[in-house]
Length: 143
Image (cartoon, rainbow, N blue to C red; front, side, top):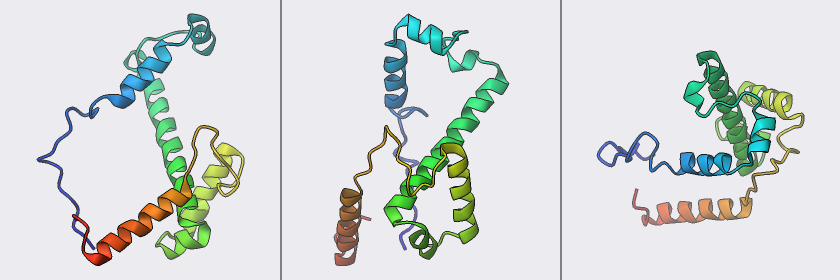
């Protein structure tokens, strides 16, 4: 097992990194027609910071829940399903709980669901994993 890498001496430019995600979000949302924005957001507020604290907390909680479930969905498919996650160290109860949460949110089992805006290239991911293991086993890995 390798030690955790320490990135304190190689800090990001800001807490936003280089600001790529925020810039993409702004470009998309500020590029929408005013009619579309008015229909989607009847009471427009220019910045998330302008929302009431409870609304901001709800937005953050929703983003956290969705990101956790998307991460679980990716892990499910990368690992190869329930038994692979379990043999990889996930606790059965955790897997069942996440499947239940996923089904509650998306209406389908993670094995059957696909996000219309995410495309997994599993063969490429698996091949990269195999190549990385071979590198490590040969001692070629920089880590």
